[in-house]
Length: 465
Image (cartoon, rainbow, N blue to C red):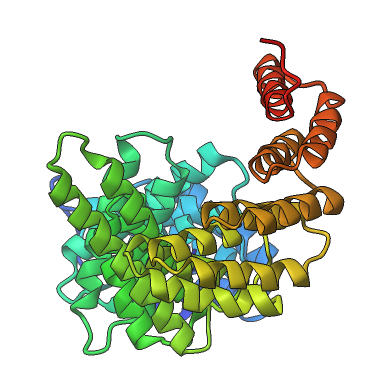
């Protein structure tokens, strides 16, 4: 919200414009109120000037109020005195008290020729600023919304009537409308209307300068985002990162927006042809990948979470060798945590790239670096088993039990028993089954235990026909 600046008193200027009593002897009943100060008010102007120059604002307000009581409601006296009263309040940052006399001045200026076009526009702009400042100070959402609606009405009138719109006014209008949307009740009605209006004002502001202000782009992005137009939001962010390549916030927002765009396009239309839907998702993922790599070229977005996102994007785009290259050193040296999502992605990439040996080697390094990580060792056991290495698979599964931290130790024990049966090692298999039986197996697990015991008995010739 743009704060209303402290404005100087315009009393001196108003007094210069306030002519003395008219020399005309009479006016007709149809004549507009004369643009002149009455004798009674004019007699007190010097005193009023002295009080304001001395910053004796209480006395100045008291005198102004006395003069207003005697002035006709639609007279030039009321118009001038209302402006003086408003400016005295503004000099004290009393915006709520300044607003009514400012509005009274505008009503009189609209109904009588008391102001030329340019000064009237200045008054309208001042009213917009005061209303916006009052909105910023409000605590109640309803009151804030009402103040912002008033500010929006005044600044939109100013833009409609001015022959020379300015970037400042366009930015102010867009900001007021955006804030009005933010305070409006959620739903497809007022919110979308105000976001669209804010977007239009910000886009007009872009055309008023050779080098548009950064704030215009930020507002345009925010409007597109709020309206759910993620594709255009990403377009604007790509312009921002080109202009401000060291701003990590813009890069992060660009990556996040492109990832959201990929998800939105994936879920947008289930009836859409699969190939077309896949291509749009792939395009959004590629934009996210290029954004993340662009940020990292600036030394930004290099956290473990960012590296995982980078590897995940390469995986989704079918670049499995690149995933392995990214994750392998991080898992080995500890710069990437050996958590489930990292090693699962690493293993899957190794399998997709038909490089199981490299995946196993990388997991072995990670398992050695994190000796208390049972799930990591169990994943290594499963990968070795898939690659027809039962002895290594059993050794890693037993290591996983010793390390602990397994979500389902029962599964690991059944795995050890199964591999031991295949290795024709009934002693180890039986010990694993005995341990599993003490873990309160589910009915399905109990059936697995029974089948394995029967298979072991058959192997040893002890099974009952």
